Amino acid sequence: MLVTDPSWAESHPVRRALAGPYQAWRCVGWTDEALNFLIVASPSMRDRDQLPGGWIVGGPEALLEATSELEPDAFAVYVLERALDTAKVDLCQVVGIWGERAGVVPTYWYETTAGTLKPCSGARRSPKAPTELVRELTLDECVVSPQMNQ
Image 1 (tube, rainbow, N blue to C red):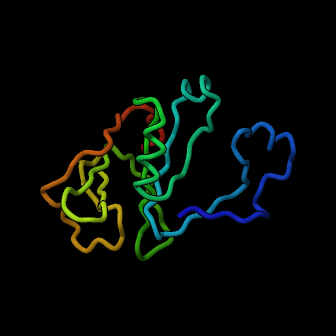
Image 2 (cartoon, rainbow, N blue to C red):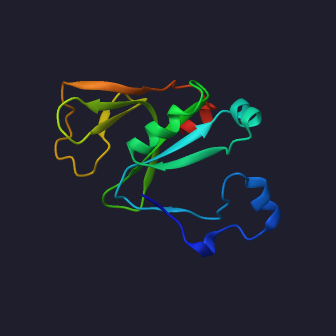
Image 3 (cartoon, one colour):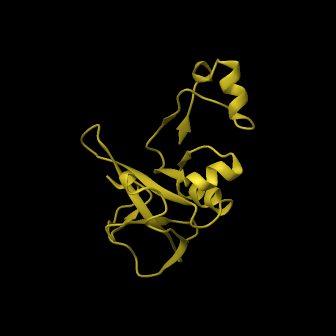
């Protein structure tokens, strides 16, 4: 989940005006309640649509909703993989989001450029992906500059 505090709002009136129609914040935080993704817009997409350079979204549902409104192949998605025992976060490029067919509550998995499937939920007990998955989102590996992959 993404969080902010009223004191973190951008106080400079020109910067606030430049951010319109969005609200400008100097800082946002996140909790580990949901896996967080970074959507990075391509330079041509930002220039044409006057969009931000990117978005941090909390959870796979928010990712699917946000990317459904964007032009395909005009953005890249990264996952903020947090280490369990340290204050380290790895930024890994996502190439797909998968949903499980079975179950009442939707359960999602993400695939990285390394080809591994991992659960989007930390509560998921089994690290092994089920056989019945449906691809919800396919992403191009090379949409944004290669230096983001480091």
